[in-house]
Length: 456
Image (cartoon, helix red, strand yellow):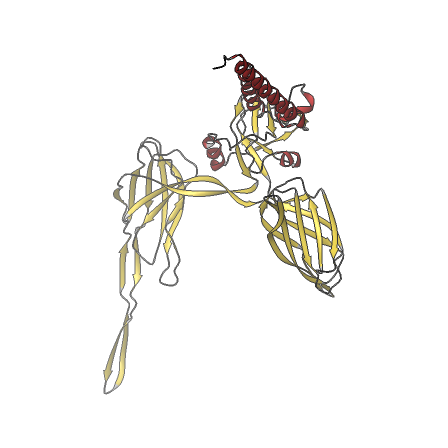
């Protein structure tokens, strides 16, 4: 009976710990704008979040005022640019009419599902030409208005590979178009000049020149319309300066190296930059991080570079940065090979690295907070981020929100931390003592029963 009770108590404690283990150690309210409108909010992570969150940020949670988890998109902070993507707007087969002595009018319409046109292209295989176009537009095919007057398409391939067969249109909602070419035929002079001479007794008596003219009409294969679609793209990842928490310099004369032990707040670093007081030098340097191998800790190299500086007359050159793949370590070691040179005078060490932000779509009238620091979260959350990505692709502006100061949940809430209790030496001692008592009681009961059994 005692064993059953102990097992039941242990099971209940285990379940309670499992439920309690996901408690987040830190929470920070999000300060939003007060305009009340729809917005795409961005929260930049800072050093307190980096210091307490998991390496892959799997323990970050956005919670609203009702305790409901809110989806977010985690991304590196990057400068963004808007590019214009040209997409086709399908149209019907054009119709052609002659106008005046030498003009044509091409009429065509966009298909029902085609986007409004931002421009058109006259597709022709013709070379060596220049034509003036007038573009008219209509919403219903009855009332026409002028969109572009005196647009020029040309091809100067006779002289150089230069040509332009496109015409940009102003913003419009037209579904029907007229392309008017007032003079659709051009006159070209023949490349060869015909020369006739009249000779008498070997002497030239008369000379005549004739230049043949060739009339070439504009031949249009088809008319292609297009529309512009803006798309916002990440351009370059921004680098941020991160001050280190502390650094300590030591010199190993035997191995002729300088060792800089660096402590950080686990920011997403990609390098260290040194500020030195030594004017001229060139030294090999290596960044290392501690790696646990069983009970032994070894230093593993993650980046190397040649640090150098040259300051002489008009020369002022420095390269004092060592880069490496992104890391979120609390301790680093920078080893500088001095050979037989005196150690460098290191004045400061600064970290450089990426920045991260959370993007989310808040609901009107709701407040949000960021929670982090749950050690038992096993995997990244799987959120539906397609709406956020679509807004980014379309170039919608991002509104920056701020994080309030960090609050330690464990210090503000009076609750029993069963996880720490189960891992404490006191609990383990009590559990062992309880097991010994249960075992002793079982042996006592067993021996008593054996003593009561009749002897054969």
